[in-house]
Length: 80
Image (cartoon, rainbow, N blue to C red; front, side, top):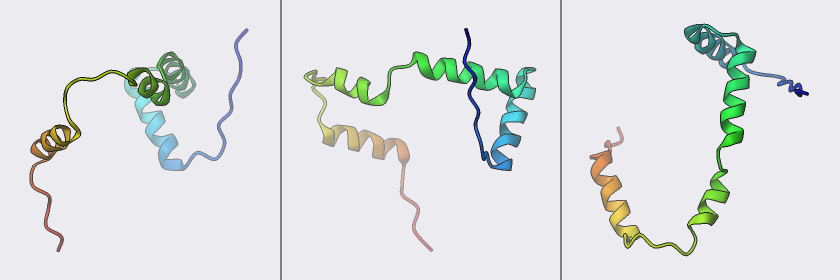
């Protein structure tokens, strides 16, 4: 038997965004949230994922990762 979940105190802009997303897909807001909850529940948590990586080694150093990210990001903007 299905369970009911109620979300209180959503900001108006959040609900408007959900309503817009649901409309784009031709479904109701509850159906959109049901799909998203199902998708979220089927995914491994970030903590569990990180724990599953313990003891594995890709051979890539932290410095190499930071360097690659810096290349992708490009120049940092100069503050005004």
